[in-house]
Length: 486
Image 1 (cartoon, one colour):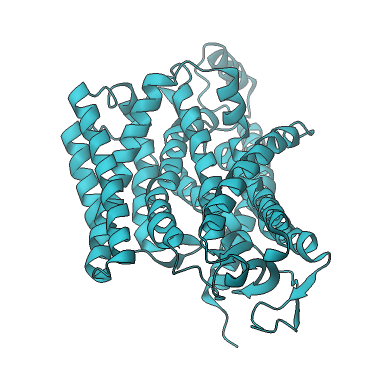
Image 2 (cartoon, rainbow, N blue to C red):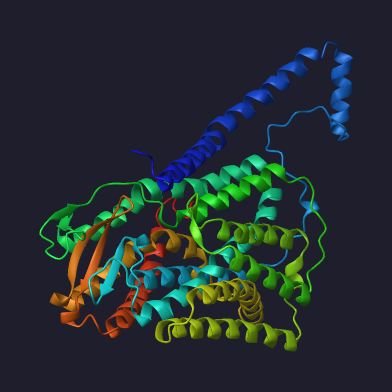
């Protein structure tokens, strides 16, 4: 049987992470020590006369000892980059906001019957996908498209922004070793242990054991399907690509290129080009775990290396100093994109509009919205949330842990919603692409035709998951050694 392409991508990503960790954390430090020791021995053997030793010592004292070998990590000249400034608190606020939106995104996906989190909730006529409801077609699809267009891209931009200073401070080897500790190792733990555990616990909560009625055995559901362990990458695709981008930058960077601060007109042109790209290259199959494939890859590369360039050229100090008219123009364009997106979805749902032409136009609007909304969000947070506070620090410090933990609490919240509905819902076990998931079905005869259950369930799940995951992440980071990784 042919190997599924998705699983081939998973194995290649794991192999890359494992190989990089082995080299940077185990072999490279030993190789560096041996090389340094070998150089010292070579120098010692080459010193034949006492006169040469005295001359060498005097040169060292005067700071001229060019041949002295140091075993300390070689760091890049930090003066090549921009001098360090005061902490940019508004970027911490944005990072926290984006993490909250990731949790919200996946919670909405549960009630749109997206199985990526390990749980789905379906109401109405039985079927694998929640395609007919206005909740799904008008609200969820447009909201998730708009959200997907910017929130992971902005994560790449912020991380790219802080990458040059970290590289200058630590040097290539120490920088990549730190990336392995904070990105690769948590990702591997997630894929092999935490992700499968989240899905297993969803089965335990729901069925009281690993087995439940088979989703595919409709309508009798007399057969049983049991949980099967499988690797589960979940949201770690972002970590894999972030590490890959970081390696490319660390291995290829030589000197900062001088790029002037883009003007508002340049940024609007960029937004137009981004919209055209989204229209011409619609959302496709994943590419090495990256959702959307090449559609997303080009955008994320632009945002990550745009963040790098913003740091090297000190864009952030002046780029966001918009005139009031430019500020309101950007806000108006962002609102217009959202309104048009929801309006077209409503037409498709209720008036039977041409889906092909609308999809192309909606793709352009989503791509244009991604740049415009990013600028609006950066400007707004810099203007109103750059003072710093204990609350902002709490959310900023725990955002990374929340990103990795939230599937567990999202599955739990979805299960509690099904318990509140009682006998109205039927719990079913399913297999989606080789991954065991849990589905909750509310038939039409039990009120499933009312979309109110989807709206209420989505709001309930979003709120409860947020209330559980942030304090839990905070407590987890208090364990010894965890804060150094998360």
